[in-house]
Image (cartoon, rainbow over all chains, first blue to last red):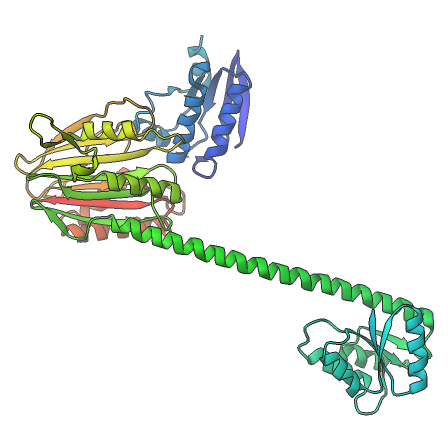
Length: 111
Length: 400
Protein backbone atom coordinates (compact mmCIF):
# COMPACT_ATOMS: atom_id res chain seq x y z
CA UNK A 1 0.00 0.00 0.00
CA UNK A 2 1.16 3.51 -0.71
CA UNK A 3 0.77 6.11 2.02
CA UNK A 4 1.81 9.72 2.40
CA UNK A 5 2.89 10.23 5.98
CA UNK A 6 2.77 13.51 7.90
CA UNK A 7 2.37 14.85 11.41
CA UNK A 8 0.04 17.46 12.79
CA UNK A 9 1.43 18.24 16.22
CA UNK A 10 1.80 14.82 17.82
CA UNK A 11 -0.84 13.22 15.66
CA UNK A 12 0.36 10.90 12.91
CA UNK A 13 -1.54 11.18 9.62
CA UNK A 14 -1.34 8.51 6.91
CA UNK A 15 -2.95 9.42 3.63
CA UNK A 16 -3.91 6.40 1.53
CA UNK A 17 -2.65 6.94 -2.02
CA UNK A 18 -4.73 4.16 -3.60
CA UNK A 19 -8.16 4.70 -5.08
CA UNK A 20 -9.46 1.24 -4.17
CA UNK A 21 -9.14 -0.79 -1.00
CA UNK A 22 -10.31 -4.23 -2.03
CA UNK A 23 -9.54 -7.91 -1.45
CA UNK A 24 -6.18 -7.84 -3.27
CA UNK A 25 -4.66 -5.16 -1.02
CA UNK A 26 -6.70 -5.64 2.18
CA UNK A 27 -4.21 -7.89 4.08
CA UNK A 28 -1.31 -5.51 3.34
CA UNK A 29 -3.45 -2.51 4.27
CA UNK A 30 -4.23 -4.01 7.67
CA UNK A 31 -0.58 -4.92 8.27
CA UNK A 32 0.54 -1.37 7.43
CA UNK A 33 -1.97 0.27 9.76
CA UNK A 34 -1.02 -2.02 12.63
CA UNK A 35 2.66 -1.29 11.96
CA UNK A 36 2.03 2.45 12.26
CA UNK A 37 0.42 1.93 15.64
CA UNK A 38 2.96 -0.56 17.00
CA UNK A 39 5.73 1.85 15.98
CA UNK A 40 4.36 4.16 18.65
CA UNK A 41 1.82 6.28 16.81
CA UNK A 42 -0.91 5.79 19.38
CA UNK A 43 -3.29 8.07 17.55
CA UNK A 44 -3.49 7.44 13.87
CA UNK A 45 -5.52 9.50 11.44
CA UNK A 46 -6.19 7.68 8.19
CA UNK A 47 -6.84 10.13 5.37
CA UNK A 48 -9.16 8.44 2.84
CA UNK A 49 -9.67 11.45 0.57
CA UNK A 50 -8.11 9.62 -2.42
CA UNK A 51 -10.13 6.45 -1.88
CA UNK A 52 -13.21 6.04 -4.08
CA UNK A 53 -14.07 2.43 -3.28
CA UNK A 54 -13.77 0.10 -0.30
CA UNK A 55 -15.14 -3.43 -0.64
CA UNK A 56 -16.13 -5.86 2.11
CA UNK A 57 -12.55 -7.15 2.48
CA UNK A 58 -11.26 -3.57 2.78
CA UNK A 59 -13.81 -2.80 5.47
CA UNK A 60 -12.88 -6.08 7.17
CA UNK A 61 -9.23 -4.97 7.21
CA UNK A 62 -10.15 -1.60 8.78
CA UNK A 63 -12.23 -3.27 11.49
CA UNK A 64 -9.55 -5.90 12.15
CA UNK A 65 -6.98 -3.09 12.56
CA UNK A 66 -9.31 -1.36 14.98
CA UNK A 67 -9.64 -4.59 17.00
CA UNK A 68 -5.87 -5.11 17.12
CA UNK A 69 -5.27 -1.52 18.25
CA UNK A 70 -7.93 -1.97 20.94
CA UNK A 71 -7.50 0.39 23.87
CA UNK A 72 -3.82 1.00 23.08
CA UNK A 73 -4.60 3.75 20.63
CA UNK A 74 -7.15 5.25 18.34
CA UNK A 75 -7.80 4.97 14.64
CA UNK A 76 -9.63 7.95 13.16
CA UNK A 77 -10.73 8.56 9.61
CA UNK A 78 -10.89 11.76 7.61
CA UNK A 79 -11.73 12.95 4.13
CA UNK A 80 -14.13 10.08 3.49
CA UNK A 81 -15.79 10.55 0.09
CA UNK A 82 -19.53 10.20 -0.43
CA UNK A 83 -19.19 6.88 -2.27
CA UNK A 84 -17.30 5.38 0.68
CA UNK A 85 -19.33 7.20 3.33
CA UNK A 86 -22.58 5.60 2.11
CA UNK A 87 -21.07 2.17 2.73
CA UNK A 88 -19.94 3.26 6.20
CA UNK A 89 -23.44 4.48 6.89
CA UNK A 90 -25.10 1.30 5.60
CA UNK A 91 -22.91 -0.83 7.87
CA UNK A 92 -23.12 1.65 10.78
CA UNK A 93 -19.34 1.96 10.74
CA UNK A 94 -19.82 5.73 11.01
CA UNK A 95 -20.69 4.96 14.64
CA UNK A 96 -17.63 2.75 15.13
CA UNK A 97 -14.99 5.04 13.62
CA UNK A 98 -14.63 8.70 14.48
CA UNK A 99 -14.77 10.51 11.16
CA UNK A 100 -13.71 14.08 10.31
CA UNK A 101 -13.72 16.19 7.17
CA UNK A 102 -9.98 17.01 7.30
CA UNK A 103 -6.83 15.71 9.04
CA UNK A 104 -6.55 19.02 10.90
CA UNK A 105 -10.01 18.59 12.40
CA UNK A 106 -9.23 15.00 13.34
CA UNK A 107 -5.99 16.09 15.01
CA UNK A 108 -7.80 18.88 16.87
CA UNK A 109 -10.33 16.38 18.20
CA UNK A 110 -7.58 14.42 19.97
CA UNK A 111 -6.64 17.37 22.19
CA UNK B 1 33.44 -36.99 -26.70
CA UNK B 2 32.39 -39.70 -29.13
CA UNK B 3 33.06 -38.55 -32.68
CA UNK B 4 31.87 -40.15 -35.90
CA UNK B 5 34.60 -39.76 -38.49
CA UNK B 6 33.43 -40.22 -42.08
CA UNK B 7 35.94 -40.53 -44.94
CA UNK B 8 36.20 -42.91 -47.90
CA UNK B 9 40.01 -42.55 -47.91
CA UNK B 10 41.28 -45.14 -45.35
CA UNK B 11 44.65 -43.37 -44.94
CA UNK B 12 43.17 -39.94 -44.23
CA UNK B 13 40.60 -41.59 -41.92
CA UNK B 14 43.38 -43.38 -40.00
CA UNK B 15 45.39 -40.15 -39.53
CA UNK B 16 42.41 -38.06 -38.44
CA UNK B 17 41.22 -40.83 -36.12
CA UNK B 18 44.64 -40.93 -34.44
CA UNK B 19 44.68 -37.17 -33.97
CA UNK B 20 41.21 -37.20 -32.41
CA UNK B 21 42.11 -40.13 -30.12
CA UNK B 22 45.25 -38.32 -29.02
CA UNK B 23 43.05 -35.36 -28.16
CA UNK B 24 41.06 -37.64 -25.87
CA UNK B 25 38.05 -38.55 -28.00
CA UNK B 26 36.42 -41.88 -28.82
CA UNK B 27 36.23 -42.35 -32.56
CA UNK B 28 33.66 -44.25 -34.57
CA UNK B 29 34.69 -44.67 -38.22
CA UNK B 30 32.54 -44.84 -41.32
CA UNK B 31 33.73 -45.29 -44.95
CA UNK B 32 30.88 -43.34 -46.56
CA UNK B 33 27.74 -41.30 -45.87
CA UNK B 34 25.40 -44.30 -45.97
CA UNK B 35 27.33 -46.15 -43.23
CA UNK B 36 27.58 -42.93 -41.21
CA UNK B 37 23.85 -42.30 -41.51
CA UNK B 38 23.11 -45.73 -39.98
CA UNK B 39 25.22 -44.83 -36.93
CA UNK B 40 23.52 -41.44 -36.57
CA UNK B 41 20.07 -42.92 -37.04
CA UNK B 42 20.75 -45.51 -34.34
CA UNK B 43 21.65 -42.63 -32.02
CA UNK B 44 25.25 -43.87 -31.60
CA UNK B 45 26.82 -40.48 -32.07
CA UNK B 46 25.87 -36.80 -32.07
CA UNK B 47 29.14 -35.35 -33.37
CA UNK B 48 30.07 -35.89 -37.01
CA UNK B 49 33.29 -34.91 -38.81
CA UNK B 50 32.71 -35.82 -42.45
CA UNK B 51 34.58 -35.58 -45.71
CA UNK B 52 32.69 -33.79 -48.48
CA UNK B 53 33.25 -36.00 -51.51
CA UNK B 54 32.46 -39.66 -50.96
CA UNK B 55 30.69 -42.46 -52.88
CA UNK B 56 27.10 -43.50 -52.03
CA UNK B 57 26.25 -40.48 -49.90
CA UNK B 58 28.33 -37.33 -50.05
CA UNK B 59 29.11 -35.33 -46.89
CA UNK B 60 26.74 -32.49 -47.77
CA UNK B 61 23.92 -34.97 -48.47
CA UNK B 62 24.58 -36.75 -45.16
CA UNK B 63 24.25 -33.35 -43.56
CA UNK B 64 20.89 -32.68 -45.28
CA UNK B 65 19.65 -36.11 -44.25
CA UNK B 66 20.57 -35.47 -40.62
CA UNK B 67 18.83 -32.09 -40.59
CA UNK B 68 15.65 -33.32 -42.23
CA UNK B 69 15.36 -36.35 -39.92
CA UNK B 70 13.42 -36.02 -36.71
CA UNK B 71 16.24 -37.03 -34.38
CA UNK B 72 15.91 -36.97 -30.61
CA UNK B 73 19.05 -34.91 -30.06
CA UNK B 74 20.96 -32.34 -32.02
CA UNK B 75 23.80 -33.68 -34.20
CA UNK B 76 26.76 -31.35 -34.70
CA UNK B 77 28.30 -31.61 -38.17
CA UNK B 78 31.73 -30.44 -39.38
CA UNK B 79 32.28 -30.80 -43.12
CA UNK B 80 35.79 -31.17 -44.51
CA UNK B 81 36.63 -29.79 -47.92
CA UNK B 82 39.75 -29.60 -49.90
CA UNK B 83 38.29 -27.20 -52.41
CA UNK B 84 37.83 -24.28 -50.03
CA UNK B 85 35.65 -22.44 -52.51
CA UNK B 86 33.04 -19.94 -51.39
CA UNK B 87 30.15 -21.63 -53.18
CA UNK B 88 30.89 -24.85 -51.29
CA UNK B 89 30.67 -23.08 -47.97
CA UNK B 90 27.28 -21.66 -48.91
CA UNK B 91 25.98 -25.04 -50.05
CA UNK B 92 27.33 -26.67 -46.89
CA UNK B 93 25.75 -24.08 -44.59
CA UNK B 94 22.53 -24.36 -46.53
CA UNK B 95 22.61 -28.13 -45.91
CA UNK B 96 22.92 -27.41 -42.19
CA UNK B 97 26.63 -27.87 -41.48
CA UNK B 98 27.77 -26.26 -38.23
CA UNK B 99 31.40 -25.73 -39.18
CA UNK B 100 34.02 -26.46 -41.87
CA UNK B 101 37.58 -27.76 -41.97
CA UNK B 102 39.91 -27.29 -44.93
CA UNK B 103 42.12 -30.21 -45.92
CA UNK B 104 44.85 -30.83 -45.09
CA UNK B 105 43.49 -30.63 -41.58
CA UNK B 106 45.76 -29.14 -38.95
CA UNK B 107 45.51 -30.97 -35.59
CA UNK B 108 45.25 -27.66 -33.72
CA UNK B 109 42.36 -26.42 -35.88
CA UNK B 110 40.60 -29.76 -35.44
CA UNK B 111 41.05 -29.49 -31.66
CA UNK B 112 39.51 -26.01 -31.32
CA UNK B 113 36.66 -26.71 -33.76
CA UNK B 114 35.73 -29.93 -31.96
CA UNK B 115 35.83 -28.06 -28.65
CA UNK B 116 33.54 -25.34 -30.03
CA UNK B 117 31.16 -28.08 -31.21
CA UNK B 118 31.25 -29.71 -27.78
CA UNK B 119 30.21 -26.42 -26.21
CA UNK B 120 27.26 -26.10 -28.58
CA UNK B 121 26.19 -29.68 -27.92
CA UNK B 122 26.49 -29.27 -24.17
CA UNK B 123 24.40 -26.07 -24.28
CA UNK B 124 21.90 -27.83 -26.49
CA UNK B 125 21.76 -30.79 -24.10
CA UNK B 126 21.30 -28.43 -21.15
CA UNK B 127 18.39 -26.77 -22.93
CA UNK B 128 16.85 -30.11 -23.83
CA UNK B 129 17.10 -31.23 -20.19
CA UNK B 130 15.56 -27.96 -18.99
CA UNK B 131 12.75 -28.29 -21.53
CA UNK B 132 12.05 -31.83 -20.42
CA UNK B 133 12.01 -30.69 -16.81
CA UNK B 134 9.67 -27.78 -17.65
CA UNK B 135 7.38 -30.08 -19.62
CA UNK B 136 7.22 -32.34 -16.56
CA UNK B 137 6.41 -29.41 -14.27
CA UNK B 138 3.84 -28.16 -16.74
CA UNK B 139 2.16 -31.58 -16.78
CA UNK B 140 2.03 -31.67 -13.00
CA UNK B 141 0.63 -28.12 -12.91
CA UNK B 142 -2.00 -29.03 -15.47
CA UNK B 143 -3.13 -32.03 -13.45
CA UNK B 144 -3.15 -29.96 -10.25
CA UNK B 145 -5.14 -27.25 -12.00
CA UNK B 146 -7.59 -29.80 -13.35
CA UNK B 147 -8.03 -31.27 -9.87
CA UNK B 148 -8.70 -27.85 -8.33
CA UNK B 149 -11.05 -26.93 -11.14
CA UNK B 150 -12.99 -30.19 -10.77
CA UNK B 151 -13.21 -29.62 -7.02
CA UNK B 152 -14.45 -26.07 -7.53
CA UNK B 153 -17.03 -27.23 -10.07
CA UNK B 154 -18.25 -29.86 -7.61
CA UNK B 155 -18.36 -27.26 -4.83
CA UNK B 156 -20.29 -24.86 -7.09
CA UNK B 157 -22.79 -27.59 -7.90
CA UNK B 158 -23.25 -28.35 -4.20
CA UNK B 159 -23.68 -24.66 -3.43
CA UNK B 160 -26.28 -24.16 -6.18
CA UNK B 161 -28.24 -27.15 -4.89
CA UNK B 162 -28.85 -25.20 -1.68
CA UNK B 163 -30.72 -22.48 -3.58
CA UNK B 164 -34.53 -22.67 -3.81
CA UNK B 165 -36.05 -24.44 -6.83
CA UNK B 166 -37.28 -22.08 -9.56
CA UNK B 167 -40.86 -20.75 -9.38
CA UNK B 168 -41.18 -21.79 -5.74
CA UNK B 169 -44.42 -20.84 -4.01
CA UNK B 170 -45.28 -20.96 -0.30
CA UNK B 171 -48.52 -19.73 1.30
CA UNK B 172 -49.36 -17.96 -1.97
CA UNK B 173 -46.04 -16.11 -2.03
CA UNK B 174 -44.01 -16.63 -5.19
CA UNK B 175 -40.23 -16.61 -5.35
CA UNK B 176 -37.80 -16.25 -8.27
CA UNK B 177 -34.08 -15.59 -8.28
CA UNK B 178 -30.90 -15.03 -10.29
CA UNK B 179 -27.42 -16.03 -9.15
CA UNK B 180 -24.17 -15.05 -10.94
CA UNK B 181 -21.09 -15.99 -8.89
CA UNK B 182 -17.96 -14.01 -9.84
CA UNK B 183 -15.96 -17.26 -9.63
CA UNK B 184 -17.02 -20.89 -9.43
CA UNK B 185 -18.31 -20.54 -5.89
CA UNK B 186 -19.84 -17.53 -4.21
CA UNK B 187 -19.88 -15.74 -0.89
CA UNK B 188 -23.52 -14.90 -1.62
CA UNK B 189 -26.35 -17.25 -0.73
CA UNK B 190 -30.10 -16.93 -0.25
CA UNK B 191 -33.23 -18.91 0.41
CA UNK B 192 -37.00 -18.77 0.68
CA UNK B 193 -39.17 -21.12 2.72
CA UNK B 194 -42.42 -21.58 4.65
CA UNK B 195 -41.65 -20.80 8.27
CA UNK B 196 -44.88 -22.06 9.82
CA UNK B 197 -48.56 -22.29 8.79
CA UNK B 198 -48.83 -18.64 7.77
CA UNK B 199 -45.38 -17.10 7.61
CA UNK B 200 -42.71 -17.28 4.92
CA UNK B 201 -39.06 -16.52 5.60
CA UNK B 202 -36.44 -15.34 3.12
CA UNK B 203 -32.92 -14.06 3.31
CA UNK B 204 -29.99 -13.03 1.18
CA UNK B 205 -26.53 -12.89 2.67
CA UNK B 206 -23.07 -11.94 1.46
CA UNK B 207 -19.91 -13.19 3.19
CA UNK B 208 -17.02 -10.69 3.02
CA UNK B 209 -14.16 -11.60 0.70
CA UNK B 210 -14.27 -14.03 -2.20
CA UNK B 211 -13.55 -17.58 -3.24
CA UNK B 212 -13.60 -20.80 -1.30
CA UNK B 213 -13.29 -19.39 2.26
CA UNK B 214 -16.27 -17.08 1.71
CA UNK B 215 -18.23 -19.87 -0.01
CA UNK B 216 -17.61 -22.35 2.81
CA UNK B 217 -19.10 -19.92 5.29
CA UNK B 218 -22.04 -19.10 3.01
CA UNK B 219 -22.81 -22.82 2.63
CA UNK B 220 -22.57 -23.37 6.40
CA UNK B 221 -24.92 -20.47 7.01
CA UNK B 222 -27.38 -21.74 4.41
CA UNK B 223 -27.51 -25.16 6.08
CA UNK B 224 -28.08 -23.50 9.44
CA UNK B 225 -30.70 -20.96 8.34
CA UNK B 226 -33.36 -23.62 8.10
CA UNK B 227 -37.03 -23.50 9.09
CA UNK B 228 -36.51 -27.03 10.46
CA UNK B 229 -35.90 -26.31 14.15
CA UNK B 230 -34.82 -29.82 15.07
CA UNK B 231 -31.22 -29.11 14.11
CA UNK B 232 -30.75 -26.02 16.23
CA UNK B 233 -31.81 -23.44 13.68
CA UNK B 234 -31.26 -19.87 14.89
CA UNK B 235 -34.57 -18.95 13.27
CA UNK B 236 -36.69 -20.71 15.91
CA UNK B 237 -36.68 -21.00 19.66
CA UNK B 238 -37.96 -23.84 21.76
CA UNK B 239 -40.65 -22.78 24.24
CA UNK B 240 -40.29 -24.94 27.36
CA UNK B 241 -43.85 -24.24 28.55
CA UNK B 242 -45.70 -25.14 25.41
CA UNK B 243 -43.13 -27.57 24.01
CA UNK B 244 -43.47 -25.77 20.68
CA UNK B 245 -40.90 -24.04 18.50
CA UNK B 246 -41.56 -20.32 18.19
CA UNK B 247 -40.49 -18.36 15.16
CA UNK B 248 -37.97 -15.77 16.31
CA UNK B 249 -38.26 -12.21 15.10
CA UNK B 250 -35.74 -11.40 12.34
CA UNK B 251 -33.81 -9.14 14.74
CA UNK B 252 -33.53 -11.88 17.37
CA UNK B 253 -32.58 -14.47 14.76
CA UNK B 254 -29.72 -12.32 13.50
CA UNK B 255 -28.61 -11.57 17.05
CA UNK B 256 -28.42 -15.33 17.63
CA UNK B 257 -26.49 -15.81 14.35
CA UNK B 258 -24.09 -13.06 15.40
CA UNK B 259 -23.56 -14.78 18.74
CA UNK B 260 -22.67 -18.04 16.97
CA UNK B 261 -20.47 -16.55 14.25
CA UNK B 262 -17.75 -14.60 15.96
CA UNK B 263 -15.01 -15.12 13.42
CA UNK B 264 -11.35 -15.41 14.40
CA UNK B 265 -10.24 -13.87 11.10
CA UNK B 266 -11.50 -10.68 9.47
CA UNK B 267 -14.54 -12.38 8.01
CA UNK B 268 -18.10 -11.21 8.56
CA UNK B 269 -21.29 -11.21 6.55
CA UNK B 270 -24.07 -8.84 5.70
CA UNK B 271 -27.64 -9.95 5.27
CA UNK B 272 -31.27 -9.12 4.97
CA UNK B 273 -33.65 -11.53 6.66
CA UNK B 274 -37.40 -11.08 6.36
CA UNK B 275 -40.53 -12.73 7.66
CA UNK B 276 -43.81 -12.18 5.89
CA UNK B 277 -47.02 -12.94 7.73
CA UNK B 278 -49.57 -13.83 5.06
CA UNK B 279 -52.50 -13.53 7.50
CA UNK B 280 -51.77 -10.00 8.67
CA UNK B 281 -49.91 -8.92 5.49
CA UNK B 282 -47.07 -7.55 7.56
CA UNK B 283 -43.45 -7.75 6.72
CA UNK B 284 -40.71 -7.76 9.35
CA UNK B 285 -37.16 -7.30 8.13
CA UNK B 286 -33.78 -7.23 9.84
CA UNK B 287 -31.00 -5.55 7.89
CA UNK B 288 -27.43 -6.29 8.91
CA UNK B 289 -25.02 -4.11 6.91
CA UNK B 290 -26.70 -5.25 3.71
CA UNK B 291 -28.24 -3.04 1.00
CA UNK B 292 -31.90 -2.39 1.84
CA UNK B 293 -34.53 -4.47 0.03
CA UNK B 294 -36.66 -2.84 -2.64
CA UNK B 295 -40.41 -2.71 -2.13
CA UNK B 296 -42.09 -2.74 -5.53
CA UNK B 297 -45.74 -1.76 -5.35
CA UNK B 298 -48.21 -3.36 -7.72
CA UNK B 299 -48.30 -0.24 -9.89
CA UNK B 300 -44.51 -0.48 -10.41
CA UNK B 301 -43.58 2.30 -7.97
CA UNK B 302 -40.56 1.19 -5.96
CA UNK B 303 -38.55 2.38 -3.00
CA UNK B 304 -35.71 1.15 -0.83
CA UNK B 305 -36.63 -0.04 2.66
CA UNK B 306 -34.42 0.25 5.72
CA UNK B 307 -31.45 2.40 6.58
CA UNK B 308 -28.74 -0.14 7.36
CA UNK B 309 -27.34 -1.93 10.38
CA UNK B 310 -24.19 -3.58 11.67
CA UNK B 311 -22.87 -6.58 9.72
CA UNK B 312 -22.90 -9.98 11.45
CA UNK B 313 -19.84 -11.51 13.12
CA UNK B 314 -17.85 -8.40 14.07
CA UNK B 315 -18.61 -7.99 17.77
CA UNK B 316 -20.61 -10.21 20.12
CA UNK B 317 -23.70 -9.00 21.93
CA UNK B 318 -24.91 -6.63 19.25
CA UNK B 319 -28.57 -5.77 18.84
CA UNK B 320 -30.05 -5.88 15.38
CA UNK B 321 -32.92 -3.63 14.47
CA UNK B 322 -35.99 -4.92 12.81
CA UNK B 323 -38.39 -2.79 10.82
CA UNK B 324 -41.93 -3.45 9.70
CA UNK B 325 -43.77 -2.59 6.51
CA UNK B 326 -47.33 -3.14 5.39
CA UNK B 327 -47.69 -5.20 2.27
CA UNK B 328 -50.56 -5.26 -0.21
CA UNK B 329 -51.51 -8.05 -2.55
CA UNK B 330 -49.43 -7.90 -5.72
CA UNK B 331 -46.53 -6.16 -4.01
CA UNK B 332 -43.06 -7.45 -4.58
CA UNK B 333 -39.87 -7.39 -2.61
CA UNK B 334 -36.42 -7.54 -4.20
CA UNK B 335 -33.33 -8.55 -2.24
CA UNK B 336 -29.96 -8.09 -3.89
CA UNK B 337 -26.28 -8.22 -3.03
CA UNK B 338 -23.87 -5.28 -3.26
CA UNK B 339 -22.46 -7.00 -6.35
CA UNK B 340 -25.45 -5.36 -8.07
CA UNK B 341 -25.13 -1.79 -6.77
CA UNK B 342 -21.31 -1.85 -6.83
CA UNK B 343 -21.13 -3.44 -10.29
CA UNK B 344 -18.61 -1.29 -12.17
CA UNK B 345 -18.81 -0.44 -15.85
CA UNK B 346 -15.73 -0.01 -18.06
CA UNK B 347 -15.28 3.55 -16.77
CA UNK B 348 -15.21 2.36 -13.13
CA UNK B 349 -18.61 3.84 -12.38
CA UNK B 350 -20.87 1.87 -10.01
CA UNK B 351 -24.37 0.74 -11.04
CA UNK B 352 -25.77 2.31 -7.86
CA UNK B 353 -29.15 2.37 -6.17
CA UNK B 354 -30.64 5.14 -8.32
CA UNK B 355 -29.92 3.27 -11.53
CA UNK B 356 -31.30 0.08 -9.97
CA UNK B 357 -34.58 1.90 -9.26
CA UNK B 358 -34.66 3.43 -12.75
CA UNK B 359 -33.85 0.16 -14.53
CA UNK B 360 -36.44 -1.65 -12.51
CA UNK B 361 -39.06 0.86 -13.61
CA UNK B 362 -39.66 -0.64 -17.04
CA UNK B 363 -39.55 -4.25 -15.79
CA UNK B 364 -41.45 -3.92 -12.51
CA UNK B 365 -44.88 -4.73 -13.95
CA UNK B 366 -43.69 -7.75 -15.94
CA UNK B 367 -44.07 -11.28 -14.49
CA UNK B 368 -41.70 -11.92 -11.59
CA UNK B 369 -39.24 -14.10 -13.54
CA UNK B 370 -39.21 -11.74 -16.54
CA UNK B 371 -38.57 -8.81 -14.20
CA UNK B 372 -35.44 -10.48 -12.81
CA UNK B 373 -34.30 -11.52 -16.29
CA UNK B 374 -34.72 -7.94 -17.52
CA UNK B 375 -32.92 -6.48 -14.54
CA UNK B 376 -30.00 -8.88 -14.88
CA UNK B 377 -29.79 -7.98 -18.56
CA UNK B 378 -29.55 -4.28 -17.64
CA UNK B 379 -26.78 -5.05 -15.12
CA UNK B 380 -24.89 -7.11 -17.70
CA UNK B 381 -25.24 -4.31 -20.22
CA UNK B 382 -23.82 -1.89 -17.66
CA UNK B 383 -20.92 -4.22 -16.86
CA UNK B 384 -20.07 -4.70 -20.54
CA UNK B 385 -18.09 -7.94 -20.01
CA UNK B 386 -19.21 -11.48 -19.24
CA UNK B 387 -17.33 -11.59 -15.93
CA UNK B 388 -18.57 -9.89 -12.79
CA UNK B 389 -16.13 -8.54 -10.20
CA UNK B 390 -18.38 -9.66 -7.35
CA UNK B 391 -21.22 -12.14 -6.94
CA UNK B 392 -24.51 -10.84 -8.31
CA UNK B 393 -27.59 -12.21 -6.55
CA UNK B 394 -31.23 -11.25 -6.98
CA UNK B 395 -34.10 -12.74 -4.96
CA UNK B 396 -37.64 -11.54 -5.60
CA UNK B 397 -40.89 -12.48 -3.91
CA UNK B 398 -44.45 -11.57 -4.86
CA UNK B 399 -47.39 -11.50 -2.52
CA UNK B 400 -50.57 -13.09 -3.91
